[in-house]
Amino acid sequence: MNIILIILVFGIVVFFHELGHFIVAKINHIAVNEFSIGMGPAIFSFQKKETKYSLRILPIGGYCMMLGENEESEDENAFSNKPVWVRILVIAAGPFFNFILALVFSVILIIGCGYDEAKIAAVNPEGAAYEAGIEVGDTIVEIGGKKVHFFREIQIYMLTHESASPIDMVVKKTDGSREKVTVIPKQGEDGNYYIGISRDRYNVAAKGVGGTLKYAFYETGYWVNATFSSLKLIFTGGVKSTDIMGPVGVGGAFNDIIEEVKEESSGVKETMLNIILNMINWCILLSVNLGIMNLLPVPALDGGRLLFLFIEAIRRKRIPQEKEAIVNLIGFALLMILMVLVFFNDIKNVFFS
Image 1 (spheres, helix red, strand yellow):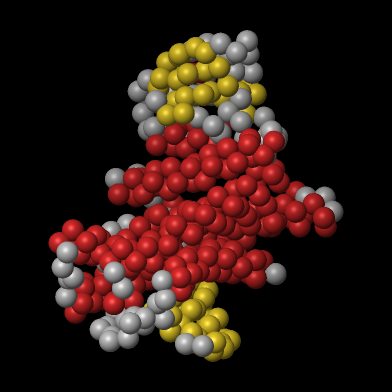
Image 2 (cartoon, rainbow, N blue to C red):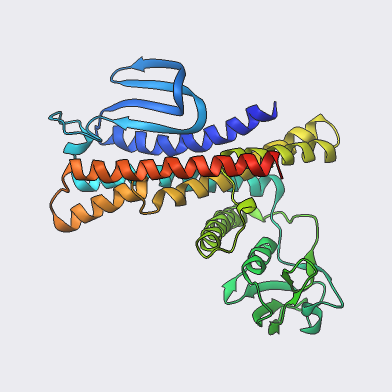
């Protein structure tokens, strides 16, 4: 049962990404040869007009294969024969749909379980926050020059703050006044730095439609910032190999959460509701990650193809398709190597750690 839920989450995220390419291609009268969810041999497929729709056995990706996408074609409905701005819209539509999906699911999540406000429920009397005058009931509204909407944003900031250097914060006091404080984190036994605060375990409901939409945007923005922070840590060597997860690792982590939900929930109804909310949360996380990763200017990804198209728009001259194809092929080969390395890293972390 758990594996079906995990595959469903991956499938939803990939489906909406490819759907973005597909819809914008169709709007601009570009022929789509195949719309596929999954890779490898087809489990199920059917033909409708010029498009073949496929469900394939490996739930690790998908594709929207357009006529003239990787080769020259004389057909007026070929991707390669459309104006450069149309091609830019088609390629950008995949990541854009990922962000739309994340926003829609964020609305559902905020309605379903509210949000974790940055209001302090407990202060460690031996911690840095206590020494700075922060009290129970205060709300953190800014940390390190960044606005705070969720308690999670404080936690992720501390993950990237690996020293005892001072942190400037703005705190909203219980009387409504705002106070600037400077907190000097203290190192814990695990080597990480903490300021010694915690939140209430219960979330807060958003007020009205406006409040729900506002915090849904904040939720999506949180995952965007979290993704960029993670990329920064990866490129600066701030993460261990055990912290990097591919599809297998993500599936294992999601499986652990499902089992934890089953243990902590009372009754079938509550269990199902909590599993659904966790699935939505993972869809938001993965959708934002897929959207951002695909916008990176890496050959074979949407971002790499957009880079070629922007160069074409600036030069007003198309880059020879055979040269672009060679670069994309090299990029694809490197991505495959990276996927294999991540896969074996996942196997090591899941089964041998």
